Length: 294
Ligand SMILES: [Fe+2]
Image 1 (cartoon, rainbow, N blue to C red):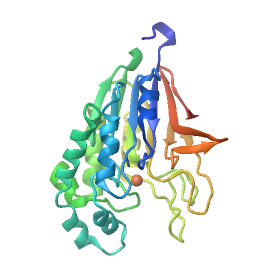
Image 2 (image 1 turned 30 degrees about the vertical axis):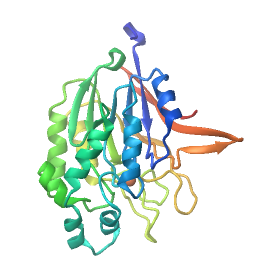
Image 3 (image 1 turned 120 degrees about the vertical axis):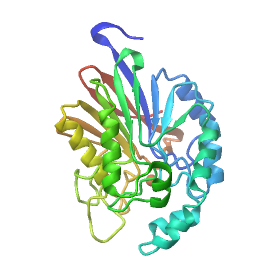
Image 4 (image 1 turned 135 degrees about the vertical axis):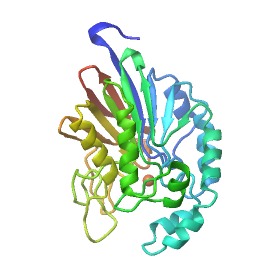
């Protein structure tokens, strides 16, 4: 633990894993000295069985860790397809059946790694007081809430308005320590180009693909005098469909926004396998984020 004016917590942020995780990642993070690990979700790709395998590996982490479910976690392939298809809302509700069970089984596989959604935690990593607010699970971005029937049954959230209310209540539960948001997709309000940090790159029309409820929650936190240090998220892969690069981080109104979704996070570089994550350094005065390829 650090002391006095030099207190600094280091947090490893792991972007969308999408199955790119192995024993060496476990060994690296267990020896990394990080105080906390935050997984922004999408451990799985298109099958839950392989996602479970990643989760069972994550449970061997000896560093405190939290994970928010992404749109690939706890959804089977048909369900994910129905969530993506523009006019499949009836099927979406049908396929939500069993999602609670699938999420419980993911949670069990993760062991001590906390699978969190609509949650607030008060921590003091390395002596630095911090509120972690975990947002809406399974976000797919855009205007519509994914997995709506499941959100209603599991969290009582049946609209964007009730999601905003839920997020505001989490902010109200925080004390005066700074807040760090963990979300699968980032907030709206940070750009409407395909290569904006959470811009839509898979439709002809470029638009803001961020989560509106998260933007409103951040506005609420700021207007209530809360110090929001950072929002860490992923989902919209940094390399866009047309091959452009999104910014990895953006600062706006004193809040640092980090998109950690470097996919795939395992890459060959100069004949060597490298693994990506983002190192957050948090002090009483602020936060910085640095990309790491190890
Ligand atoms: Fe995602």
